[in-house]
Picture (cartoon, chains in turn blue, cyan):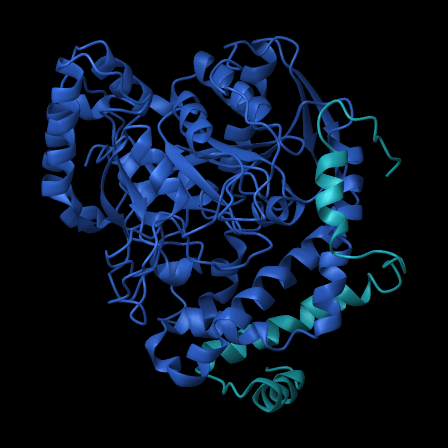
Length: 475
Length: 73
């Protein structure tokens, strides 16, 4: 187990701290990027978070920003902050492997809208990150690029599918990273690696130029050190995009303005149905301690039940499996050997699900959303759950490629995150402690549709009275 | 022991989709469907005739903060 340590180096600065320090002229963008590159050079041989490091391009971008600032130009609100992206966000002309062998040489002709928005805001993108193959596992295993390792203990899972995003932010390789979340793929690596991760309301962020997995449940979002970082990041990337007709037209508020720093008056529902059932004792202990901290800071905590979860869980299991199987059908026929065992096995099951049940799952989604909101968010601002029911598992005990007997441990990882993809609700995961093996535990907060500001406000206020998000692994 | 449904599903997948079982782990995954089928069996009859997938976007809007949509569970 690695003991938490503190550090005052540049790489300890969060995204907003880096950008604000740069804006005030206290630090150069080049110094921030060089500090990130040096840390990656020193430690990524252990963590394996990075697929492609665009060293020269990042340094060149930093130098341009330093000159622009010196010339008195106004720069974006993420200027100076080093970040990286999961290797499934397209940049025209640059390889996007999607963590796979099948797309190891794939060069898209378009650039993802979210990358264009982050570029415009001044974030310095240093390259691409390890991920689950085609974003299809919750653990961080990758046969083609090597497993990503948890910086808190290298034998343990990072969580997936945004494995490099979570591990890299935790390891202080960069200030923030783009992840994606179809069944928990932002919130799980955030939890397992001890960082902050948010998925917005379904359709909140454009998916143009992003590798699809399940068009009903795919979400784009950030992994960051703090809720404030996530607020600024989300404000940059959220909003309607003509290139993605499915993206929502609801106005995007200034999420940072919503951060009052106070939990007073916040009404928290704790859903006793399902989310805590069978949870490991160290996880429950950290979760209850988090609730107690919120209550002590002025929140009210109320236990509720949600009978709708029985149906939600059953239907959740159908949608992404069928949609994933559909878009991979040609490759599953032509190149089944090019997939990792765990992925082809998982995709295969999707072909067995009858079409009428898939349509039923989509048809009941609206009514079940209304029911779940009535059960858990009527009279409450957020609903709270542990993000992961169990302690962080090891890479070995969730390795299906090594043994099919690990199937259930592998599939159980996303048990508490998947329902919120089916429901489409904005959901955040923040660190709330450590288990008895020194691995992080996460607190998950969800709110009504398009209430990203509410979950960010609650998460930020919690981080004002705790310091779990400030702990960093001693690599 | 592997449920008998596994072999039948493998045959149906090959017939409908042209995809062959890739490995032993895939059989393990299909065996898992046995439990899922039971869960779905318990939900039979809950679909309302007028329900349709497009209702989800409307529900997202109706369930926003401040909207008077409180429905009884």
